[in-house]
Image (cartoon, rainbow over all chains, first blue to last red; front, top):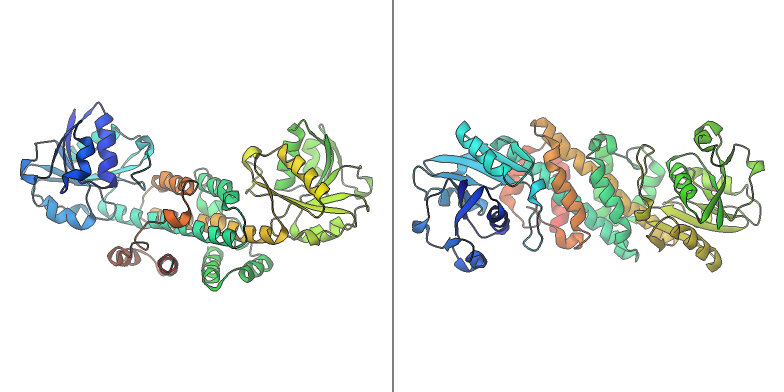
Length: 247
Length: 247
């Protein structure tokens, strides 16, 4: 049985608390938040506090807090505590506690309204000493099938890559949606294509999956498309078409 | 029972032939291809030919051929034939037969190796006269639950939108893959995020689903990301970040 205390009240804290409370191999000893109201919904299941001085002893303290707060909050822990943060873009060295340090980063986009199937959420773990890494691995395995050892440099690059495949992809959907709205075409017609595009790259690499007028250098279609777009859309169309053509 | 003749030997012809051969309400009377070898695999199930003069009479002739060939091939049909093309980017007016005209456009990316669940493939249909539109609708309903009446202008815009949500999205996956490869991170870590991003916009509009450093104007993270990227990647990052911020 691994005991944990979860610090924070945002989406990640919320989802981690839910999933660990369900796990038979993890004991959630306590939740901490600056404003107690945000974790009050858990008070029937676990001890909650807004006073850092009253933190209970646990195997792992999980900081699910904003990136900027990690250094300051971690500096408050006692010497022998094992403190991990959950951020994709912050180095392990941002932790300022004197004791054991680690990272426990669930790579998924969380929203409070939507349930998450944690089994398929990749967990990227890091710790300086092997014993601590093994403990994190054990903890991660209780909730997910997808556990990866990723160091701070790799994790920061993964975070940039995630911006492309999540934020920027979503923006491409927005452009598609805007074009459809302008011509009174239901955007839902594109849903199956969007899904197929996302699933295809599980089978073949995105480089091999590339199709379209840019890939086959179909200038006639490219010109017709450009005529259909506004200036802002044209700029994006031109740049990505050029990028696809330059490999 | 609706009878059809399918003209062509590419991916769309191949998949339409397969699905219509399975349908109890459609009779595939004949397949035509310029080179017989490409449709030979169907010869046990249906009459095949490479001689246009021997085409059998049918309710609908489906041209699943390259965009550039549509005008020329359609001009070869007899006056009373109902000829439809299957292209996303070609107007109905490209059909040069003297009789009935229509469009039967399956909006999905097809590859010969991969089976398609036609039930979920959106079929965009168009015809000038209502009786012909109803016939196409009946034909479309035999294989898909998702049938849309879309005119030529709308279809051409849909085709541009598809470039953004399919080709350009896939290119964003390629950039993510490249970043991962450079730092020895398995790209598969990003698969669940990619899938979640694609599924999310079925629930909420992509505009409302937008998250990330660009959306929240997190300049510190944006600068760190730019430092991690090569020049080509930076150009894309800057343009899309700017576009997200300008709404």
